[in-house]
Length: 373
Image 1 (cartoon, one colour):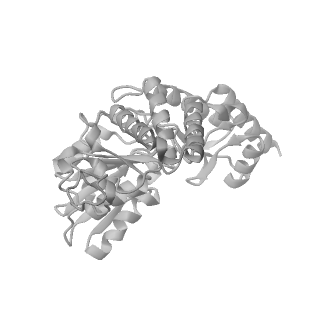
Image 2 (cartoon, one colour; image 1 turned 60 degrees about the vertical axis):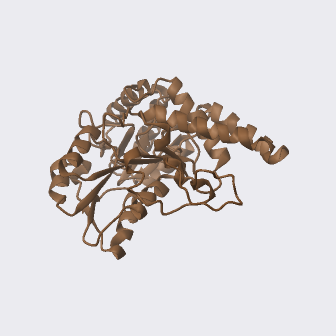
Image 3 (cartoon, one colour; image 1 turned 135 degrees about the vertical axis):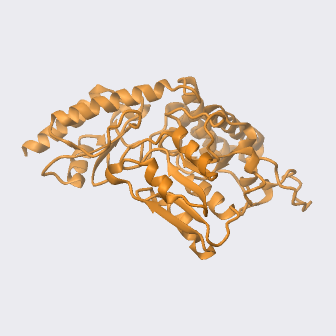
């Protein structure tokens, strides 16, 4: 991770830096796009298929259940706009969701679909509250795997079982968890999943992926289609709307070649590091360094805003320093080349597996100096 030469980088919940293999892939693509044009397009397309294979391997999916998409928002909208709603139906989600997991559902109001926002006191997701919000007209539950501000990680198995009991669909906004924490979609019945690559997956912005369980392909209407949505996409002079029998039907137009090629390298790196549907050494490292950060923050008087529930922690830790405005502290940290964000009423750090105790010490030194000012 070249970023470590300068920064203690704690901002993967916003936009993560690229690893060296992904940088090299983008540089090569840029040179080829400049000097060779589309003469090497077939090879680029093959690299996109590598991204699809890595993504499928990461979550235990089949190749035909993966679509390469622009971002998480696009994936949520593909489901929201393609679902066969009826007036009076409802969707359940959380009141503290990132806007991308609220607005596409709220946008369904014109179709007579209600979006129910469940309160999350203290950042703790209460399955009982979710269950109380579900009734006979609920069609889908949409949740973030990890809260972008709180860092609270839901138990995927418990939520999936709730959805099965209630006979509703489960959409997972996986952007804050995929690439770090294991998920096996063959074992855990997530119906739909979307994630952009620019956070924990170590990819660039605008290159993401979507999982759609195979049996739902013909249930969800593909509302956004193009030349690449059909089974014989390169026969441009033949108009025959025979749609692909795979999630790739959502890849209707030109791909973000540079971005998806970089994502393929990032996904491959995570696979090499041992991230699989069953286990993740990277998650173990992240949880360990996050716990170290909590201890050091508490030692210097920080008030921890993120829940610290066993089994529900993540690489996101939000805190406040009494008497210090979060934005002012963020500016002081950035001046010392420590990168954080302000979220959830405090300062948010989001740590990846390459962060270490020295990085935390750099942050703590700035906080202690600020407290003395």
